[in-house]
Image (spheres, rainbow, N blue to C red):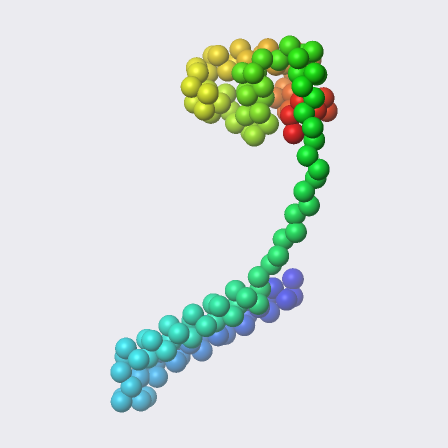
Length: 140
């Protein structure tokens, strides 16, 4: 936390110094305002590039091995292709309206598919359906 506060303090100090440099044309009349603005702009660009390179974070993402879909389980549950599409959209967090728009069907049709999924997966909620589907290895 201290490092973050120190970094922002240094950035603010650098900005204040650059603002003071912009007033340099008042003390050096031979220096044009265009040159002063150009120098201040170059200093800002340099500061931005330096800070961007200095504070760049690298995020390592572990990829879990892909789970093989159990197609036999899908058939044994009696899930249709459309119900599987709806289940995938539920897993993505889409609402019934959004799923209907993506699949070009009405919201009532999606509600029917969702209720059929609940019966076939023996669940009562959307989150339970996704969890159960992952347990059964019918979605990733």
